[in-house]
Image 1 (cartoon, rainbow, N blue to C red):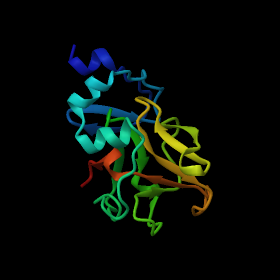
Image 2: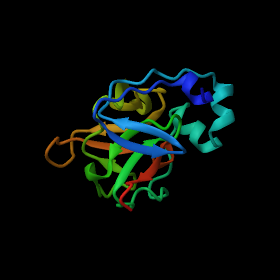
Image 3: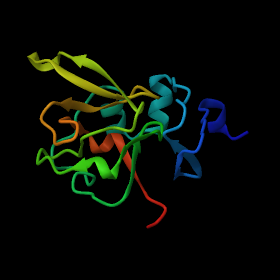
Image 4: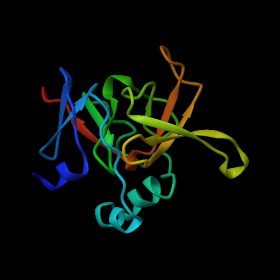
Amino acid sequence: MQDWESKVKFFSIDARRVNYNKITFFIGAEPMTPIHKTDAEWQETLTEEEFRVLRKHGTECAFTSPLDKHYEDGTYVCAGCGSPLFLSTTKFNSGTGWPSFFQPIEGATATTIDRSFLMTRVEVHCSQCGGHLGHVFDDGPAPTGKRFCMNGVAMRFIPSESQ
C-alpha cells in the first residue's frame, strides 16, 4: 500500500479519471475520506503562501496568480490534498484578478459564512481537507449565476490527457 492510500481512499464507478502526481482521481465518484492533519503536518507539505491561504484563510493579491488567465483544458485540484475542484469548462474571466468558476465539481466544495472584515460572505472550502479556497458570490454567469472567486495559490492545474 502506498503512503497516500493509507490517508485517502478513492472510489470510482464509471467516472472520469484525472491523473496527478501518479495518483488517479475520479471525478463524479463516491466521496473520498476527509483528510485531517495538524498545522505542523500541513507546513511540511505546503509552501508558506499555500499554508497562509489554505489553512489560515488568507487571500492572495489580485492579478498575481498565473491561473487567473489560464484557459487550457483540464482540472483544477486542491493544492493541499489534490482533490479535483473545478473543470476548466466552468472557468470564466470575471475581471476580478482571481481565477473564477461558475460551478464546482459536485461534492468537491463546502461553504461556511465568513463575517470577517465587517461584511458577510460565503467562504468556499475543499470538502476533503477543509482548505480555504476563496468565496462565492451571486454575480456570475449562466447557468448558475454564481462566481466562485478562488485563490490561485490554493489550486493546481492538471491538463487533460488529450493535451
